[in-house]
Image 1: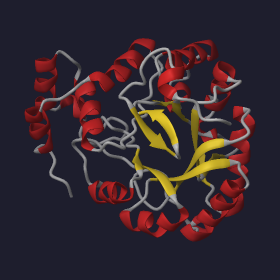
Image 2 (image 1 turned 60 degrees about the vertical axis):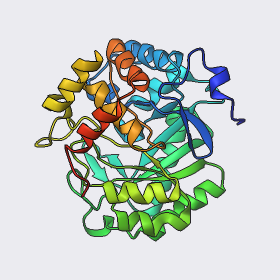
Image 3 (image 1 turned 120 degrees about the horizontal axis):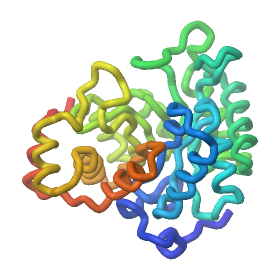
Length: 301
């Protein structure tokens, strides 16, 4: 499909401005669809939220077949897809017969997951597919024959890219060493857990900076995993939010956007009001003094 000029085709400016993902311009504040499934949102409500997403200037939607009904929600809401819409999916796990998430790391399984995503989305091509490696906790960790070498996985994804079924290859939940190993495959983005209070992955972000790779932090408010610091409870963040008459969450998202110009955010929500609040974070400009205060909260690893 032809790539449209996002700023010209969108009725409102893209939230947070634009950056490039797999050679395509995307709004720097996008949308993650996972909460539509996690919160058991009725189909009509999910469709309405997704249509609001694109009305408010977003053209980067993150999803996965193993999220449940999210792909079918997206298809119902947005197909046939606009040329400038960038659909990003994830592979590396599947749901078993009981609905539990289980590893699916072998190359043939990755291919099957790409095909499943294409079918459920009703798409001919995925703009980006992120490989969810299962090396690191917290979360699912591969065991036994699911401990697959990265090179064989990348070879399969490269073949799918050559066939035109995917546009770019990304990585999710990877170490700096794994990213360095994968660089020859042409990695376009990295999705790792990261927030202004948890910067343990700063070395991986530094490698992304060095190679111009998009950085897509998940759980950017620290609330997605137990026993992690919650950004919106931090006194410094709360004080800065009060000074600027914005929310603590907006401060946290704005800091991430300012920290690296190729950061792409994918906050998820099932609430129309919360969606607008998340997207408005793209308009928040932190003062140099506020940025310096936040920088001191968690020294990089």
